[in-house]
Image 1 (tube, rainbow, N blue to C red):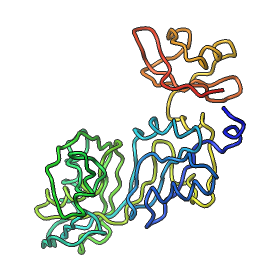
Image 2 (cartoon, helix red, strand yellow):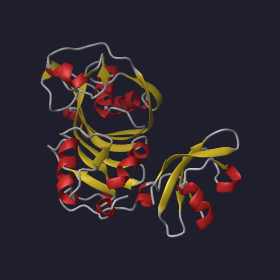
Image 3 (cartoon, helix red, strand yellow):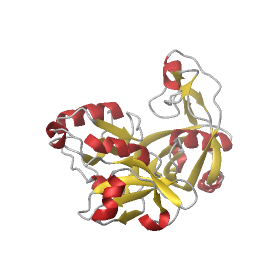
Image 4 (cartoon, rainbow, N blue to C red):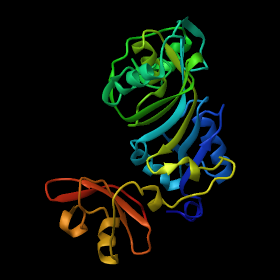
Length: 293
């Protein structure tokens, strides 16, 4: 690593994204704050959504692929009786239903049917590619294409009335990465015999990184690279094993003293992240990535 690279900021920033900002806007701002182009994010948030966004800075951008799959938590508002073109409050109204007779008990019962492993059709305003193009690009042109349902997991889903007479409910969701909360809101409305959309979405956590430790992008703090992988099992090694890890050697499970399915963060005697290891052949593990000394 060059002297210039050694002096650059690196680590994980837990950002509280503001309303109206795209995830790319946050990255662009952070590049100026940290004075480096090496900034990336894990887990896109829509412009109208707020909350936790993880930024990798410097060499920590290489860790983002381990952070993206972490489970997510959200809060928002389900509005029954109105469908929109984007499934949220930013879109145009496309259909209106009289759902004044729907009770909180019926809403809770409908929501319970979406808990567990489910198949979900991505919305047209998502970033998924179909035929080499982003769905949201096609949506801007007024096009709608067939989308394949994808498996996602909803670990917990709670709805509570805010203004049931107006069809407004608070929705709290704990789910796997890749779950679209706006689609959940719309699907609940459909199951109830009408329609619905989502508003006021806020992501409250990605894995163990929660909103109470998130900071504005203008005044971020950096967690170390080892702390960035706190949701994964970690193993500390001495200097001798550390040298082998840093050279990217395949090792026996017993040599590295790891347990479980991995991946594992391998930490040196000074608490620094040396590498991330993953299962290889039976009884051995290999580096998924090595942090250069």
